[in-house]
Amino acid sequence: MIFRSTLTGLSLAFVLATLVQAQEAQPSPEEARVRSVVTAYRDAVTGLDVSRTPALFWPDAEIFESGGIEGAFPHYLEHHLAPEFADLASFTFSEPKTDIEIDGDIALVTETYRYRITFKDGDRAPVERQGVATSVLRQRDGVWRFSLYHSSAKAVRTTP
Image 1: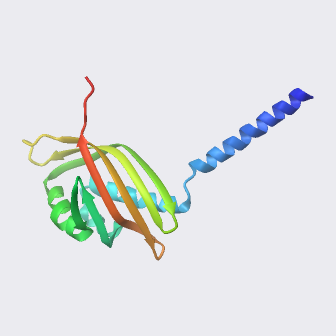
Image 2: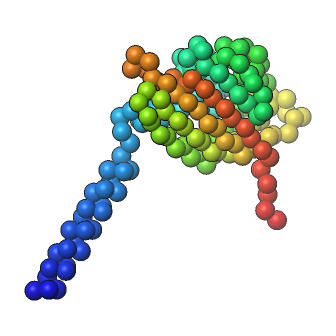
Image 3: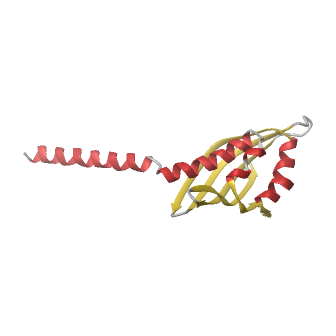
């Protein structure tokens, strides 16, 4: 009888642990919406298509990159992103990891990734970096967009 009770208790604990783990693995609808904005920005970058990016940022969004203040997104797009994309042949991400925490109408997002860019000018060597980004997305009238975006990168270290 004691064995049967212990076995039943262990089985119940296993089922409950599995249910809790399954619930934790399922993103909430809001997290899925936030993730879709973050993924859409990454897809626009890899597609070298700046035309898709303004809809992902609020007009008053602030951009910070590699120690610099880029200002509002329209300025960043015109003076930084668009001119850079014009010189690139490809931009690829690998090993992306995204963590999202939502508090009401604010989402805090951290990303780590590696990226590789190649240039239209074949004489320029490709660039590989380990990158990190921290973002704040804000929901207004049911729509999630970037309100703040900060990214930085460092050269990829090769292990001897």
